[in-house]
Image 1 (cartoon, rainbow, N blue to C red):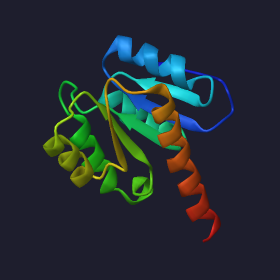
Image 2 (cartoon, one colour):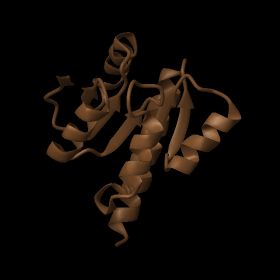
Image 3 (cartoon, helix red, strand yellow):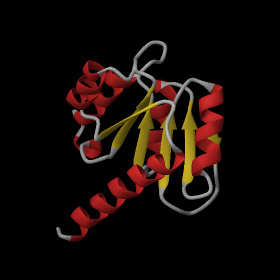
Image 4 (cartoon, rainbow, N blue to C red):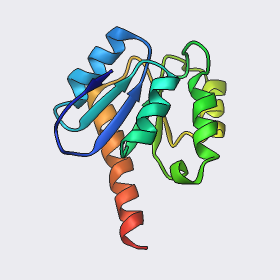
Length: 135
């Protein structure tokens, strides 16, 4: 697991692919405090130890997949408002529907555009911050 030391917004990226982890690190560590988890168990550990502002989640992983983790988190009040972006190679409309039904906030397919990823993250974080400031 990789952890950056930049004191910024914290993003947890959960993906078992080393090349994808490297790509996500290259794109996001310039802008955010990034934590990468290789599997669902690591992700759950991080979620309980760190304050995570947004999670990027792959669907296809061994054991418990990203859809199951998303459903699990949406069932826990503490994580109910955590923005979760499915970042996956599954690009069929039924996959996107399954992602949304599991509780994903947004759904991006691989390969993805760097600008689109950053824009999506910024939009979700700004929207969440706006909601919190009106309470």
